[in-house]
Length: 211
Image 1 (cartoon, one colour):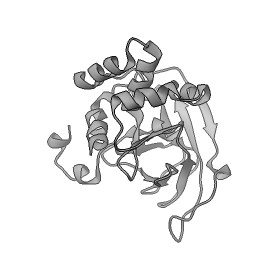
Image 2 (cartoon, one colour; image 1 turned 135 degrees about the vertical axis):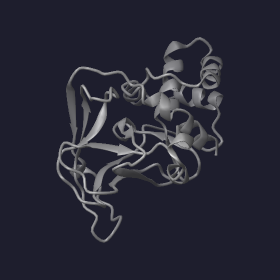
Image 3 (cartoon, one colour; image 1 turned 90 degrees about the vertical axis):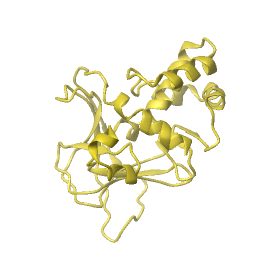
């Protein structure tokens, strides 16, 4: 669908996040509502960190404790959500109506990485000279996560997760937008939590076709 193609188009762009000074914000997932995702699912915690990562991707999710496969690292509700029929124009209108609080959380996400020229052109047309709106549209294009109906959603914490073709965690998103971040393998304390921005079938392709 259109959203999946858009997310794949910005995979390389998100790899260009700038390095920032050290700062951390803890998020304790144990306070989240418990949902059973398997016979041995448990809740753990993750930390959102701004650090001098060796790969230069800046903000990332870090597991604060060692967890096993199937552990629910984080549960979250969206701060912005749009359906499968959304266009850049309709997204712009929805973002104009977004609460100050939620738009503020969006503005904390990655906004510096470049986007393909055609997406940038549509952003400029839809924002009609409104710089703040253009930034929100840019952030949405970079950080949205696909929903089961083909739409997209933004999250304060999970949208910070970096990409890896061999991710340590995976998204499980409900139609309501409620999201669980689940460990795909054991993750050590202090290890970065990564996800895939690509579809599962694309992960099986040779590396030269994924880049």
